[in-house]
Image 1 (cartoon, rainbow, N blue to C red):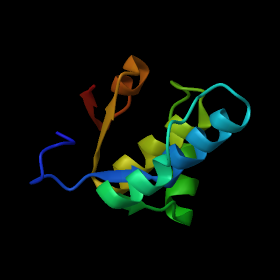
Image 2: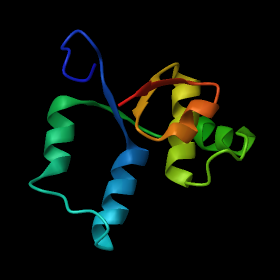
Image 3: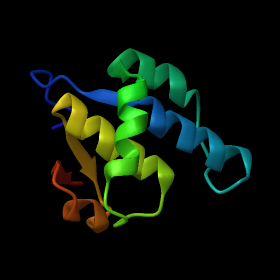
Image 4: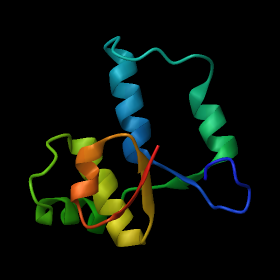
Length: 98
């Protein structure tokens, strides 16, 4: 789905924040300039106040705040999440298994 040029693919600010956080504490190795690649290949999905507020209405299925932000954005913007995290399938949002 991501490599299909006919699909509009977004990269969430929540994902960029999680990548940055994990990279800064050594939990994730980022090869090259990942952020330049994201900027070149994906549309930016910023976090609105409405997205942030929606997080509090979500059931406590997932404890990771970044994943909860992604769910809120997907619901509010009518998008699908591509993930390997099976817990996200429990939310009422479009999820595609990676």
